[in-house]
Image 1 (cartoon, one colour):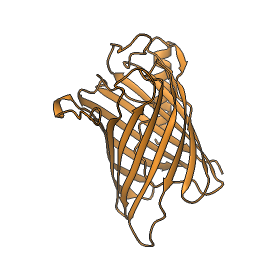
Image 2: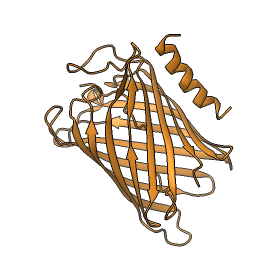
Image 3: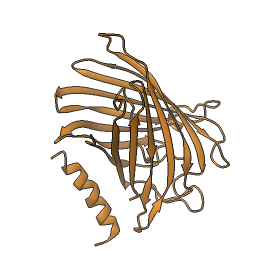
Length: 256
């Protein structure tokens, strides 16, 4: 069996648990106010596959996004009720079946304590780390991700106005504005349906017009299955997005 077929089957198996160009990153997620309890560990597996993307590369050594499969374990730990630490360990498999370790990124997430009865939440996540030239043109970088949201018995809305800051040679040498949005309708206790929107609007000192922006919209579902929490989405890229179609899933495993 070819590795391309194997990676696609691996992603489909994960789904079945639930019965300049801008390509899909190893972490396709809108942050909400979900946090580990103090002293609690967490493990999530981020998966995404590009069935139709670019066959071109932007710099020597890069893996073309077409038929690229990425798997990123994320380990987390609740420090306090408002503070959580995490670590991403991204990997990638190229269309020819070669496997690569593509970086290491610690993160720290803060969620402000809610006022009793308030549906609003806010916080901040920061990441700093290394990414291989196989998947980026800037090896060292930092992400600043504000988290602003609303949740009641029927709806969840969360907005992340992200700043992606390169810290080494390559790329734009300027912080890029990459906002993301999640809107979900709660169907029952185990299922939410909605959309997730990811955008790249260029460097903050030279924001691009609509025709030069990068956008990917996902039809998304959040499910709870046998103690696991699963996010699944199928996304379509448009305007300057490098990938036409992306399939993604995040599986949160029960730990303690």
